[in-house]
Image (cartoon, rainbow, N blue to C red; front, side, top):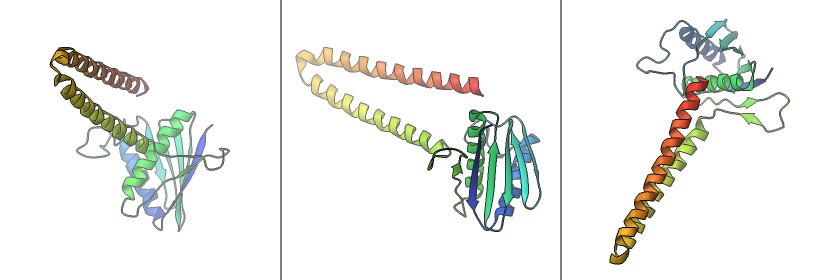
Length: 195
């Protein structure tokens, strides 16, 4: 059974433990976790959420993964266990998002350690990677437009190549648009299957 553990340094560990568990309990009762927003922040809303807690210990069950929480005077310890790797990573991402959002004033961070994993290997929230991908794709699109406009201006300036140049640029733009549309369609389809 895969598992991961994190220690969040804070002098208000009991407060964050109770806040996380209350939030999970509200989600489990069908209350909107974020009033005014459609889906849960960062992804699909979990289907089965349960929470129990005291001042120093708590348990949150999310879609089959279980997180054990323990508050000490100087840190909040999280231990997640799941039936499979995918469930573990979903639970870690959900907890990481909620803790960093709830603890943004205290600049809380969550770094997960895997028992038995190689030294230095940590599992973190995949959201920063997605942001880098989106930023990279946006930059590539801007560069493609600049190159196409510059190429078109250069080719269209030569009268005997104007027709052929415009056709080449148009075909290139349409091919790239088709590739992006195919990528988005596949991504949406795979998200719908896993959700």
